[in-house]
Structure formats: C-alpha cells, structure tokens
Image (cartoon, rainbow, N blue to C red; front, side, top):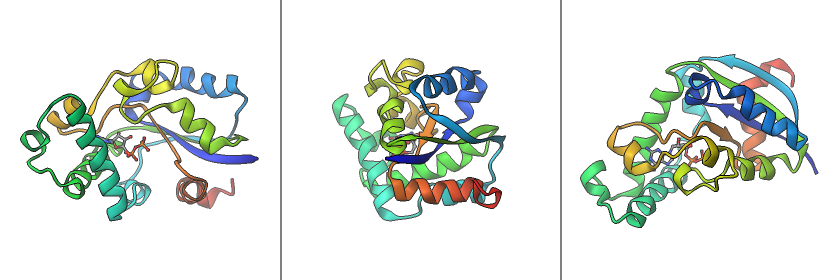
Amino acid sequence: MLERTLVILKPDAVQRKLCGKIISIFEDAGFNIVKAKLLTPSKDLVERHYPNNNNWFIGAGNKSISNFKEQGLDIKEVMGSEDPLEIGKTIKKWLVEYMTSGPVMAMVLEGNNAVKNVRKMCGNTIPSNADPSTIRGRFSIDSSDVANAEHRPVSNLIHASGEVDEANYEISLWFGSENV
Ligand code: GDP
C-alpha cells in the first residue's frame, strides 16, 4: 500500500550533521522524498505536534517507568513522581523546549507501507534499547535515565509518524498550506 509519512530530523540530527546519512538510508530503502524543509519550529507547532491528551502522556510516562525498572533505578528520585501522567506531561514540556531550540528537517516520505516501514527503520524510542541496525540504534546510545536526570528529552535523532491517521494529521500540520 503506497503511503506517506512525516519524518522530522530533530535538532540533535541537524547539529551532528547526520541529515545526509539518514536521508540516504531512506533513499536506499526505496522511499521518495516528496517534500522537505529546514526550519526552527514555533512553540505552537510543536505543542500541536505532540498530542495534548492523557493517553499520549501516560504512554510516554510508562516508557520512562519501564526503562527505569529494567535498570533497577528509582524513577521517583529523578522525576519526583511515579505517576505516568505527570511524567508524560514533564516529557512533553521538555520536548517543546528542545524541538524549538534550533533547526529541524521536516520531510514527507512516500513508499510502500511507509508509516510502518519508516518506524521500523527508526527503531525503539530509547536508543540504548534500539537494534543497532536501526537509525536510533546506529547513531545514539541515549536512554531515559540519563535524559530524565538532565531534564531533556531522550536524544533519538528522529521522529516518524506512528499510525496512518497520525501521518495525515502531521503532514497537514507541517506542510498543510503547501499542497503536498
Ligand atoms: P516516539 O514516537 O518513538 O518518538 O516516542 P514518543 O512519542 O513516546 O515520545 C516522543 C519523544 O519524547 C521521544 O522521541 C523522545 O525524544 C522523548 N521521550 C520519550 N520517552 C522519554 C522518556 O522516558 N524520557 C525522556 N527524557 N524523553 C522521552
């Protein structure tokens, strides 16, 4: 099924000059870049990009909690809470600060089952849990315990839409007025 998905190379990817390498990985796999731009996103854009709903907060919070558990670490000590909702809200705040801190490269990739295949190529949210053959696993070793202690999002270089509906929403959010 031919699909389109939104990919954002985050500020860490731009700063580390990894855009070319990451784009090559997608091109080598057969994806077409149908739209791309470099921009420093506004706070409003990032606020709308990462959903303001409890399911998203709880999902992000739970990822943190399980990462801490796996390593035998106490999340309350670092985050001041064990509540996934509270932890998720804090992560969103860090994400908004981080994603507006410098240029990112936003692009629309098109290809067979693009949403699922691009996510697979990105790898696990937490790079130290990501397979080394994935973009996150190959270029980062960050994890939530270190990132939480430093009050910043996990540096995982890339965002890719999680579901087809999310991709449609995100493409119109980032490129809506530009007739992709
Ligand atoms: P994604 O779809 O794989 O990007 O994951 P999410 O949508 O759950 O999280 C959005 C972003 O928040 C991630 O890409 C990370 O940059 C950051 N993030 C997710 N979980 C954590 C966490 O436990 N701690 C911190 N500090 N950042 C996180």
